[in-house]
Length: 117
Image (cartoon, rainbow, N blue to C red; front, side):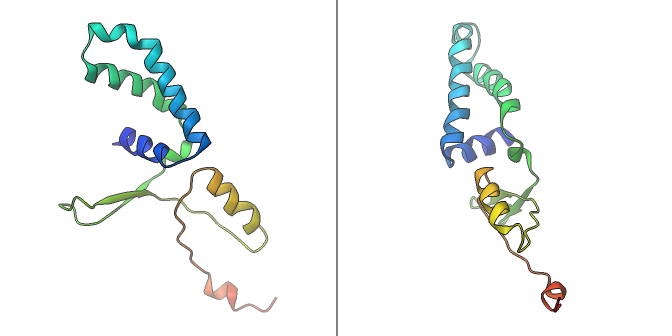
């Protein structure tokens, strides 16, 4: 589910992730007095539901599934397109890394590569 994916991605990130995890901790602390009146499962779901809308948009990107459906090794990764040209490469790639892109699949326009202008 999206909550598990978001939490796993946060654990693989940097200072930005710590900021979001700290916000989750604040929500848990704020609501801890309600825990005695509800199950731990309900408490966790409500806290996560409050926390999720504040996460960066890249956590809601479309995801691709890899691996056999019965395999425990099945993986999902976010899918997005990032058009990089010779003119914007030095700007776009670092920005994508800062925003959470962790995997790049490069394709090249063969027709554009064959032009002489």
